[in-house]
Image 1 (cartoon, protein in one colour):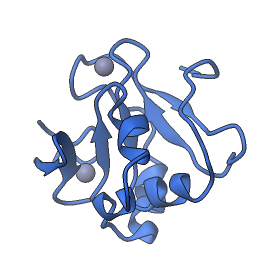
Image 2 (image 1 turned 180 degrees about the horizontal axis):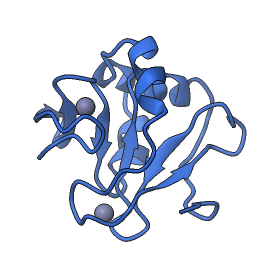
Image 3 (image 1 turned 90 degrees about the vertical axis):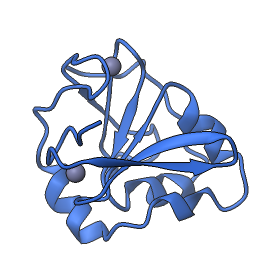
Length: 120
Ligand SMILES: [Zn+2]
Ligand SMILES: [Zn+2]
């Protein structure tokens, strides 16, 4: 799979039965449907997010991207209590892309993923 933002190869990271795709260049993370919520309940899930948040902020500006799985244009979402975090989500397959550092920030609050405010 290629990164929806920088087109580099994504590497499959296996943790506790989950397979998360992480970009080898920008360190963005792709979660398939529900993986994000389920992983967030485990101990220390932030270790999958190894990237530099300054790099993540740069890539956060790239927003016209399509789903690496089903090619639907991704919409942008924020957790309800964390409007500063903007991640990309697919309305079709419910996959989610976090830029480097965004998943760590997301975990700092009890944020949950909701697709109801997804804007194309
Ligand atoms: Zn990338
Ligand atoms: Zn999709």
